[in-house]
Image 1 (cartoon, rainbow, N blue to C red):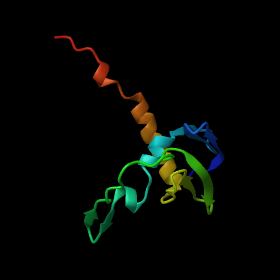
Image 2: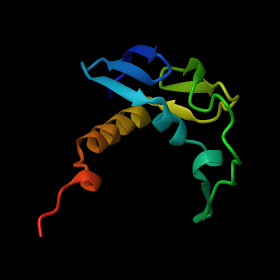
Image 3: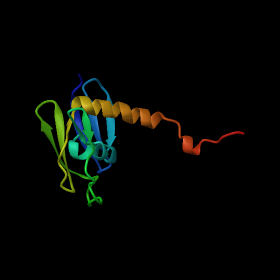
Image 4: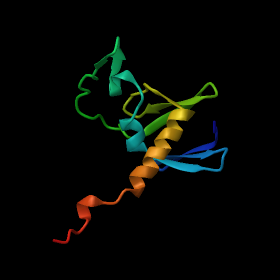
Length: 118
């Protein structure tokens, strides 16, 4: 599995990771925060029953701004957001899966602005 060589925060817009396989991935901060992998954000499954997350209420200032990033062992990142949220661990595997999802989203046609001929 690939591991990061460099991790950079670019102007509170996106996190850029250079992987050891030569891949350079840009993660929009909004995407990273909205997809935070923790039970408070995604819900959880207990005994095969999915329990949705509770309503987080209104957004707080700094929701999509990173305060700090820390390595978790040699397998993940922990991100603390400026609104105080610091749950969820982003494993290398998860970050690579997110990069694939972002690439797919970026390459989808824009159906909302597609002209239809009748």
